[in-house]
Length: 201
Image (cartoon, rainbow, N blue to C red; front, side, top):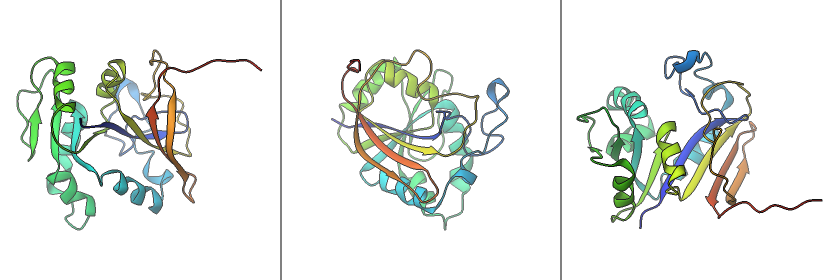
């Protein structure tokens, strides 16, 4: 059984929208695109690289796939992530795409949830979900997330798409590894651990 791991950059107030640049995702009038780079540091890059050591595939929604497919094939070959991103297998969940051209990409067919369950049951390494906010919501609603790997950056945006949006399924999380970089970014790995429990003081 393969693990599906949600890997996401977040602001301190939980926004995941458009970390990479002003034009990445301006949906709903979002004007804070590109917030991640200046709120990051070298330790973040090293931590993220470690998150891919036991993963051999990515799971992407349409928007993230199109952003990545327009960038990574011609990205700087000296960037250590370039060969990795191009070489990994990419599974794409989309209701509108009819084909995917980026090397090593496969378009999931039929019912998305059933396709994801079949993918989890297949042979192979871990599968990282990168960005892909709508897809992450689907995974969470159907209890298909095995782990969260989050970078939580010291910046507050106030608006934008959130990973744990209103209506998120109440879930207890078990911390696997939580560290803080010198720049104040929290690198957190968490696993779902049933439902929250409640008590009073």
